[in-house]
Image 1: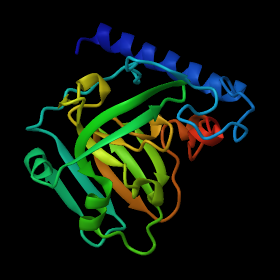
Image 2: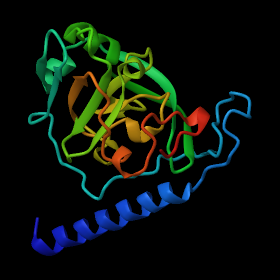
Image 3: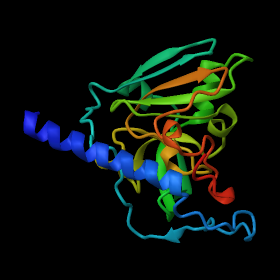
Image 4: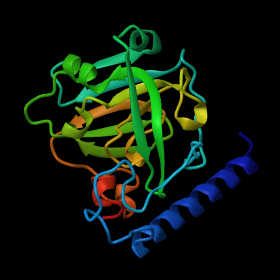
Length: 222
């Protein structure tokens, strides 16, 4: 990457982070109606979209299947480090779920294919003291969530969306999908799943966003 392009990307990232931090301080998009509506498909303050908006930090790592790795480590009895072939050789699951972005859009009926979180955890065997997960990504991004939220029936590491390989701009070749939480918790370009004992805030959590991120109780900001 030439110096001028790298400078532009750095400036784009800086402005994006500053605007999101300002949103958190201002409580932007909060409706004040969390918990007051029926638990239908659209959480408070969300609007339904048909497309899939692209949001990132200005850097989309180009990771080929040949260079892709997924490490699962930390407080587990059996850490492992998969190649793309090893990942692809695991039992595959298909799942349909809605996704909800903290920037107030929701998209219904997304069809995923990948490896379920439950299968990954069954192989790694979390130790009794493991209570949280931190996802690490090829672009340096991190995000945290309770282990119980990752150990959900609809959580997975997805490689396909709508019957096609996951596009690079949406986290391909593989990303986390945890539908029950705002989608910043579903890290793109994931390359490590770390199990830990005590909570450790990730990138946006350190910048004013909520530590948990439940759309139904409007946990947008901390």
